[in-house]
Length: 498
Ligand code: FCB
Image (cartoon, helix red, strand yellow):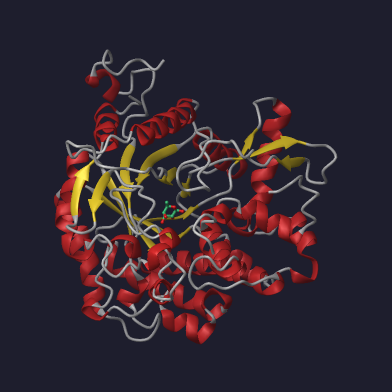
């Protein structure tokens, strides 16, 4: 896959594309005050009184994921993952980069926790690497692997930062890919539940929020359909739909396993890159179309998890290729959650369309639509309003987290050594303004995790697209706060957009 056509070109339209793949694409259209912070007294904003304030107690956090930051891929008994195999296959990653060293976070986590502390974040979302804990995915556990997360969690708590742990952020043990075809096989869903229960039993004395899976709509579509991510497959038809089904089934079985083994008070959810339909403009008809579209475009993932059934339109469109499932599967998949996490980067615009059988049409981004250096990352701040609003309205979610939001930037150090990423600051300010609009209207968003604490291995883009609040010099592993880190520190201190 060429460098220009990043996996994200696909990932972020996964829902729309998935739907269109099963249906006739043409049926959907062509698918696919302030208050100047200088005058707002920090104390006033922090109490939630300012016009751009967030609710009191709002949880500000930052996020990373194991394979993107840890390195130490052969240390302390970690088994190989599909990302080791994929990144070591020439031509798959820009510059043939790998996560072998990444940010060396495995050894530098204490310093990284100090970066978080300096930002003032109250929470950190990290992921547990399954192949550290079960080197073969199942079978004998590797206690040394879990020890790393014990050390990390203790360090976070010692610094008053709440740990939020994700159990699957794409580094599937290679052995499960070899034996079961990875998520193509139902046995992987079961192995995931066993691993989830094992980790929950050991971490939930200190970790109170657990996410099962990160971005169904990315790892399945980009890894198993488009071949741009590990494991690099190009499935179609029934095989693809069955893989999607096993992903949500794995989530549901894991929720049950976590509930069975976790300490009381543990809260369980997921982190999905929901396809967010934004109305082309805000009239009742377009808003209603956007709600319908969000439900249909997420049919294989968040919709079935929330509703316990696949939508009629999805099943009808898939026809003979519809996934095979039982009622018991659907019960597991829709196991009640304590919260819904959504990763929000970009909107998919839709309009009301009475001529369409689903009542809406997708409006593709024109070529001139502004985007970040990552070509998939179209800049549409309203995604951070509509995403949580749809989740609350469509499914009655009572506790929502923005589990990722952020942007890539070209990020070059200035002569004084600082990175003046005004583009990222502008992006964040615009998006947070929309999130503040949502919370001010009562949408129950409880926290926000900025992606990412520091530059890291950005999957098929290697180290070319930087998303961090801290600039990482990969030769020396030096971390330098960017202008956006200063901005975020102010936002957190004032609990308001600045
Ligand atoms: C999300 C992924 C995360 C990171 C950001 C930029 O889709 O979950 O790992 O790559 O995008």
